[in-house]
Length: 138
Image (tube, rainbow, N blue to C red):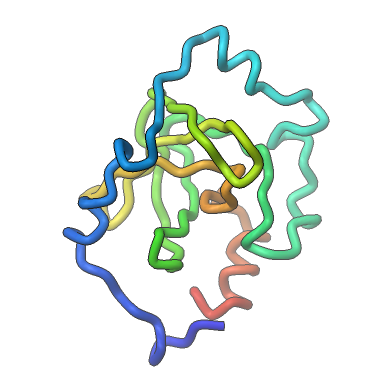
């Protein structure tokens, strides 16, 4: 569990060096989006958020432009952000091929792609905030 004394902070430059190109993300066609769509029972509308026990768990969340989210950077820190557009990408995730969403954070100064199936993007809900608080992030 991180504490404010042991948590490391990274510069904006260290995040801008980690571009989407380094993740080998590819454009997603409308047809491919249908392949990556989950049934209503598995979509974010059907998920019971309280069943998320750990921030490392993956869920097939779907996001829209403007949605408030929490993202975990490669440094392991969680930050609030906003989904910043409709241009989604596809690439390898912990669960296989998946969708990556563009998110701005650091007050809109950094934009990076995050994948729900990597467990590094969560919706900004009361339950997620309680997990972040329990983990020492809030």
